[in-house]
Structures are given as C-alpha cells and as structure tokens.
Length: 212
Image (cartoon, rainbow, N blue to C red; front, side, top):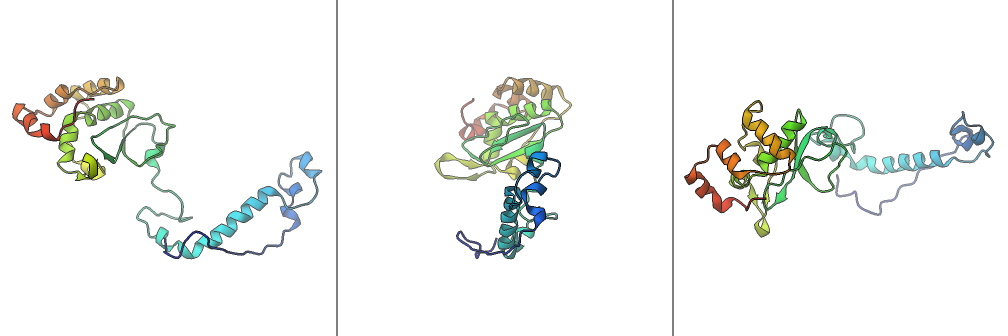
C-alpha cells in the first residue's frame, strides 16, 4: 500500500439514517424487534462504520490491486487460500534449523508463516512429511537454502520443490506413508530410497542435523 496509509488517518462521512435502517427493519420477521422503537439499529451502524473505513482506504489500495494473486472484488481479500482450506496438506516453517514438516488437521490454521503442499490423499501427506523430516532431506535442502543467523536456513517453496521424491505409486511411498502416520522419520530408509551410498552420506553429514 501507499506510504500515505498510516495509523491515525481520519475520514468523515455524513449519512442521514432513514426509517428502513431502524431496529424494526433489522429483522422484519421478528415480532420482538417490531415492538422496539425506531432508532438506528446497531447492526446497520456496524455496516456504516465498515462503509466509512472502505472510503478511507480507497485512495490507498492501488498497490493491493497490483498483487500477482489479485483477481477481482475487494482488494484486501485473500485469494490464495487453497492451502488453508485443503483437507490434505503438509506444512513446514520457512525459517528453521532443519526441515520440520507436519500434517495438520483440516481445521487447523497455522499462527506463524509456513509453506505447504496440498496433496491428493492423507497417505500422500504423511509420506511427504516423513520424507521431509529425514536428516538427508534437510542436508539436500541446505545446499540451496539461503542461510540465516544462528544456524537457521530459509526453506522456501523453491528450495523444497527441487528435492527428490520417490514415485507416489511405489512401495517406497507406502513405506513413507506408514512412517508419517506414526510421526517418525527413518533416515536409513530414506537414504536407501535416494540411493545414497556411504560416500554420499559422508559428504552430506556436515549439513545434516541429528535425527528426530
């Protein structure tokens, strides 16, 4: 948004309350409300406040409309909500010392910034979480992740997108799904799936955290 949008902005809006915005008109089907005096209804008053705020924000919203995810309608809407509403998903924090993937319940909304992947099934979500939680996947991700202070790395979507995964219809994937449902990671299993020999593991070890 524009730099001109700052705390403390003021805006005035005059509106003459008509009879149709009084309490009896709030719910015409309510006999109790029909007996109330014809005063400005609180429900309509809240809407009037929102209307006033929209008028205040309107001159400052051109940058919101230029967002890459903007589609149509009110520019302050959230458009990329698929991950928040998906029944099957894997999420992980973008700033961490290692990849820490979780499969949240469908009604859980993360409070902090996370990246995530929507999967077709619950098994796919658990398999992917077990894979990402292996120390070898963290080591591979650290080869591309931007380093941060304190030994942290930035495991964003572009980093995780490049990590190797076995075919979703393979026995290996079913093995990972079983591990994920138990909320465990098996580094030896993942190393075998990725065909990491002793030399590969030795080379990746300095970047690999301890096992969960």
